[in-house]
Length: 67
Image (cartoon, rainbow, N blue to C red; front, top):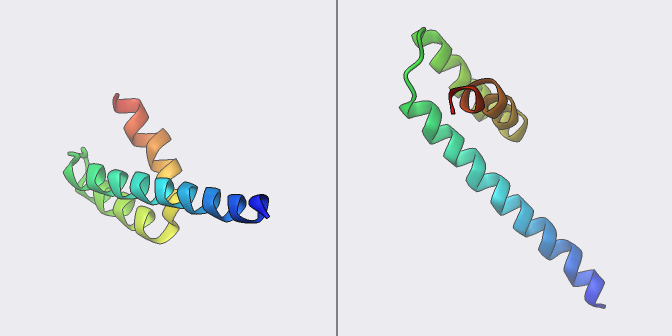
């Protein structure tokens, strides 16, 4: 019985963490200055429509390189 409640709880927690991370990257994208203004719009569209996969791409292509 415990495992029946544990799996959904873990999935909910992981989903909330992923959502907060996605929102954080959306805010980062909106505040970041890009060399090309079209690049900012493109990343914003990618983040909105591709969700978590877009956030992973943004993190490794933009955020991690600048840190």
